[in-house]
Length: 457
Ligand code: PLP
Image (tube, rainbow, N blue to C red; front, side, top):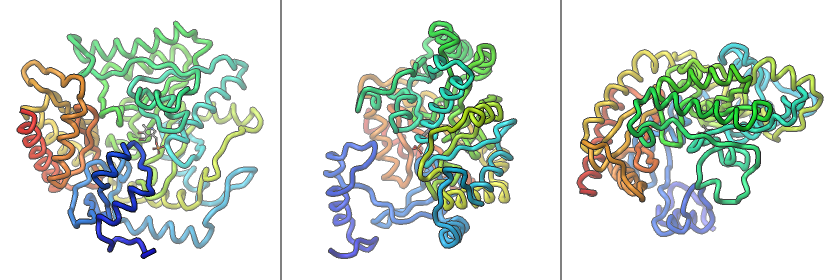
């Protein structure tokens, strides 16, 4: 067989891909007909495909390439670590310098007493860890029946059996069933889709109070934890009303329920703070991290755990849990280099003070477009909800995915990656995007919206 490389014709690569590669979250039979888009390189915020097209990546890959593409420092850190110690595990009383250094760094960056890191290879695995960790914690404290975890419909917490069960995506929960037991879902704070006649503030309170009702209904002595993303990402960048998080925090505090903030998307600068919890004033006991931790340059995730849980678990004997790649030295070294860049280049400060406000101003102006009902943004994650009738703010009915699919295709045709979730279009560009690149993003998004509007008229 010929060596498979970037130099092969696109059609040949697509045929090989279709023959042998099962893509995640994809209708693979459909893809076999159209052929996958092949990305061959990337620099800064721009992707190159096998046809030589330049595409502005307004999704940072899958919300992860926070420092942008092409940073040699991370490649150097990986190469150095591979030569020194490519692998060793952290099981059975063993450690290594990259894991020590990254853990100390994360303890320094994380708020309050979140000082202990349990590593995983991904966000999904980290959430699996969280399920076992909180249940084990309550068992050690003599309350093994306190094991139900409350989550939300339309949440995304990963794709493993645990992550998929925690998440509230019905499409995932109907495949490969049964999901794991002991997880209860309440409604999401999505005012645009579900707020009806309520004000956003009243709706936010009402949705938060569902947590209290669920705790009382299930029994305080049965509920271990509540898990949520500060801003739901994959669900469509659902920005909660201002009343939501303070009420959730009150309820968790009053009822002694552990709070897990899934920071896989919101962490590492996405909101203009190190963590989304800081943006909303949330005080979690555990934070799930991944993605921006290494800017996607190496697969790594983890749980940052507060002192009390870490100490309780440490005094509870062996925690019979871990992954071959927990604290992988190369991934830790890459993550450290990534955090160094975020800190030394003051990228989060720049997002907070300059870039996010600039993006917000441009993004919110899209609300004037005839196809757009609502434009929301927090830091560097934004969504627009499309409407078939702007005056009445009507929603697209049954096959809401169609308009999103059309718009997404128009985005690609105009050199822009935006994702669609139902009738929403969403962005989460690299944090290093410049003002000029934001202008290009908005220009291309507007053109894609114009073309979509014409196509569905
Ligand atoms: N949690 C959240 C909030 C996510 O957005 C994701 C992935 O998108 C995950 C968990 C799962 O992370 P991974 O894909 O690394 O397993």
